[in-house]
Image (tube, rainbow over all chains, first blue to last red):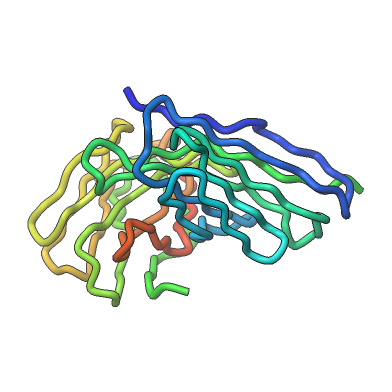
Length: 111
Length: 111
């Protein structure tokens, strides 16, 4: 069945460092979404990418949709403690009413 | 932030008890979802609904049941709670552009 994979599972960074996390689908996607879940919280919708090669920015976060619409990346510039949490990507399932979720990338700031 | 509510937020209950987790949204969304998530881990879809009187089981086998008598209300019931049901339960609804809005979750502990 359709799968969405995220790498890495954990990302340990020093505050101020940049990082990139990746999302790969086994099938071509019509769109991809990114969510952030703070520790102890619930997932919050960040952004949706629809077009091949699309790049969108939200302050220090840059989201990209691959040319083949099978992968996506999230780049965070100059990480801050407020960035801590788990970032999930998700793509539409067969029915288009459901989402296929990645397992998430957990961002941890090194002390 | 979306208007989706879950009660209770925390619940500790003994084995064998029947419980109902409440979920309500005021956005008029037709599609609603229940996910099970262990802390910091991936989301597992356990039930979804396309609208009133429509309910379907998700990918993760669950001993719970749901009902959808009103658009705004999507309760989940466990007839006989077991320690293996200990988890966080997240309710969500689907917005206009396929994005999902999550409630704050119910953290369930079965002793």
